[in-house]
Amino acid sequence: MIKYGVSVRLEEEIPEAEVVEIELDERIYEGVSIPETETEVVLAVPKYDAKGRPFNLAVSCDPVLRTVELAHKIRAKGILMPRVYEKPADKRTLESEFHEKLIKIAREGEDLSIYVMNTGKNFGHFFPWDVKWFYIYRNKMGFHNLEFALVVENAERSAKELQRAKYGERVEGIHRDDLIFPFPLSLYDWLELDPPYIRTADVGKINGIKDAVVIKKCADRDSNPGYWLGRPVSYR
Image 1 (cartoon, rainbow, N blue to C red):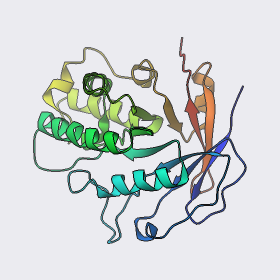
Image 2: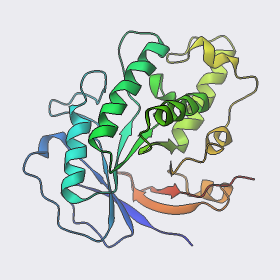
Image 3: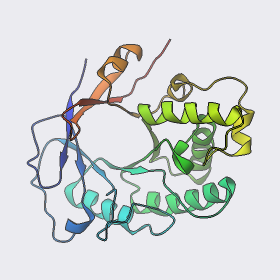
């Protein structure tokens, strides 16, 4: 059975769909209200703050915490945030600090699903071994509401960037430990982790992911269709 949902902006009317992701805008957090709906809602953390600066968890947790607060207000299922933590430091330090802030977020939104998605660049490559460490840390701390969200195109970009680095090119965001992986990385190395949230803008890719349940369908600003997939994922 295929379930469809849609992605809308905050000011748009919530359509009749099983799942809807609402794109937030930092400038209109205050005093916002959303009509009651039977639709399952997931809130996306704003990409930019009120001054037009890109989201960066290393700078502040506030955008995420405000998203959690709004999610509680409208009884959303969860929030979606990018794995962005930009500051001068080695990957292991960034990872440790990022995980510490995630625990604070998970504690505030313990009744929500906190989806952390890969961005395809820098700290946001979120390679499969990074995702495994993310789950190990999550389980150790006991916050099972933290989940991985896979963006297909970003994963494919990361796999190509890793291959470039293996050929000796200097690629930002690739750590020397990432080069230990013995064979070419592919999308299926991420799918093998059974992510509960998967996004692709290419409808054709759906046929290559067996038994996937489509839970989100959204249109980008160029009117190209995109699809969100959910559990279960089987690629063999």
